[in-house]
Length: 239
Ligand code: ADP
Ligand code: MG
Image 1 (tube, helix red, strand yellow):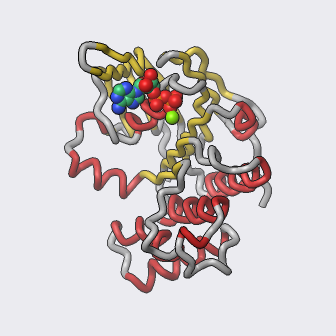
Image 2: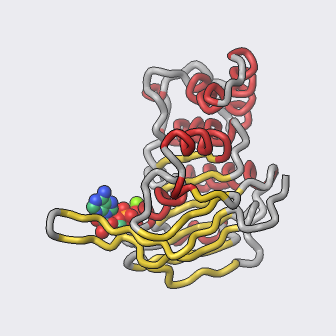
């Protein structure tokens, strides 16, 4: 379903970490809006606040000041329980280090978000197999993460992130551990999945090469947004 208002809205967001006596201001008055179906890339050098921002957007951490709205609902004000439900319903995640459970096979890892949504076992395994086929892992269905290459693990990570069709997918340096060829394959996959169902992607990275995939480009410097622009001709992934 189309969500006409900004699917993500951030109002005057601050995050201050206290390290003993010292205060680290990781985010300074961040305001932004992201619309449904946008591929939004957030750039910045190491330490600029990218991961902190992503964690606030996904409700993993509470802001020091300000608020984050997803689909018009303040995630900053939700209880942990409400947040967990909200995340399972609307959000997917892709991590730099894949974060697959080592004791589970590719199919079991991919099926996890569906389990949280109460999809019966047979059904969720069927969907997981389909997803893994779509990311080119039909020959690795019953492999464990330790038996797969980094690129294969990240494909499984993508299958898992998209399995339950979340409206927003958050990705923190998803290709940070991959070589340039695998990076391109992984990005093409993320973009083509997202385009198919008009899902919103929020991807943070220090890699300027990622810009060509973005519809919206946001730059962070020392916890502040220094630019936020729509990029016309955002890449239409093949297929
Ligand atoms: P990036 O992801 O862009 O590399 P981060 O969001 O991880 O940057 O960090 C932004 C700043 O906040 C850095 O100065 C970092 O040291 C600090 N920071 C991040 N997380 C914490 C934390 N849990 N405690 C204290 N300082 C933190
Ligand atoms: Mg980071």
